[in-house]
Image 1 (cartoon, one colour):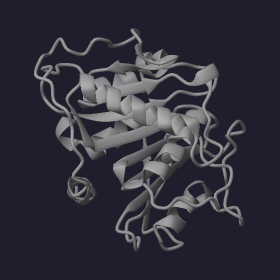
Image 2 (cartoon, one colour; image 1 turned 90 degrees about the vertical axis):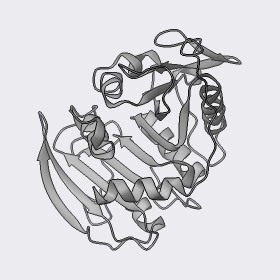
Image 3 (cartoon, helix red, strand yellow; image 1 turned 30 degrees about the vertical axis):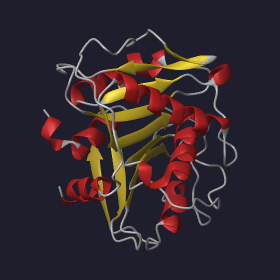
Image 4 (tube, rainbow, N blue to C red; image 1 turned 135 degrees about the horizontal axis):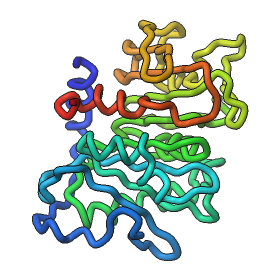
Length: 270
């Protein structure tokens, strides 16, 4: 609860603006229907039981390699979760079904910002509650976007994909980082620390936020699979970093995103 309150307070200080529409039929495109932007576009999924007027938090999710936006929209562990959590899901389409995230100033970071600007014209979103996620290469794209957008991102929710170079620098970072990775991942290999530490996947965010080497606390939790959680809550930046690891491979961990949204938006938890 303290973390949720801290997130809300910090985001409130960003003083970002949103555009509101009162007409519930003003969206123009949802689900598998593409919202076009130049040569490509994005897909969007409103939450269940939304009244068409209330302001929504937004989760922009970058699909994995070889996929497109309809995949996360129709995925039971992504779109099936955001629908119940009261979150607007936005899923951009990558050119060539891939993403450009290797270097700062990536083409797709600029595209994602255009997507959010366009979403804001169609839906009453709250940019102070922006979550950024992705799977596999899409997770690495989410890292790139969060590295460059910094405090404009409320929470980074990375799934099985990081920067290969954890020594890369970001001027700042998201308000909160939450990442999950499988210890047996051989597609986007689990990035163990230099001495084999399990905390390796988030050492970039530990460094940027000036966190202590050791996690503030560790715990275990389960869905249909078991997770070990590492949390850094006393970082000098005032931000927080959380890492969940599991013993599996390269997949979207069942129940992981659902649990994160329950913790972030407890008023929507069933």
